[in-house]
Image (cartoon, rainbow, N blue to C red; front, side, top):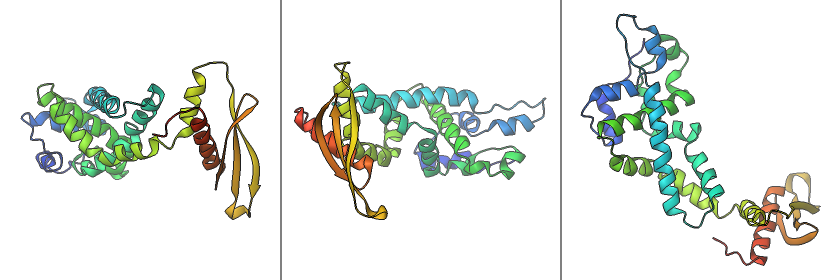
Length: 237
């Protein structure tokens, strides 16, 4: 069985000091450790806290996106949230806190490099959110500031890329009618294989509504969709 760093030291990374340190200890305890404990000395693992932390994470991220991306449709907000709460992103946030160094793991998991496993880090991060939520009297005041601040780079990347997803915005516009068919046609390719330029036409039913060029088909499709949105009088966000 492998103990990590003293959990009290984690406050230096989170800015939160626990009143009930046992909540934090549970949040950092992986099931591989509890499975190796003596039956007469039961120890809680972080799975239940992970369940609660997932819900806390979802509401804070959803509320932030709803408030700060006021012109984005539900489908766009859903995609943004999926990126921000996915396992890879949560593991990255856990690494910012050096969370892996504090985990309590079973001997086998420790030997298998469990402190760096994406799934283990992501689960522990959600459990940490739940532990703070409970210790702070079921308040999300600290958690909102802490979590959104920690996600600053990831949210900025979402904001930067949101306006560039013209295909999604065009598809959502077309779907409002329900009977229109939107598709893309490559009308020309130029240049050698290692440096091609594509020209793509966005088609609405049998009508060309936009053309675009790019170094890849995807880039050309985005350019064509952007031109189509301009045609339909949709502002470029």
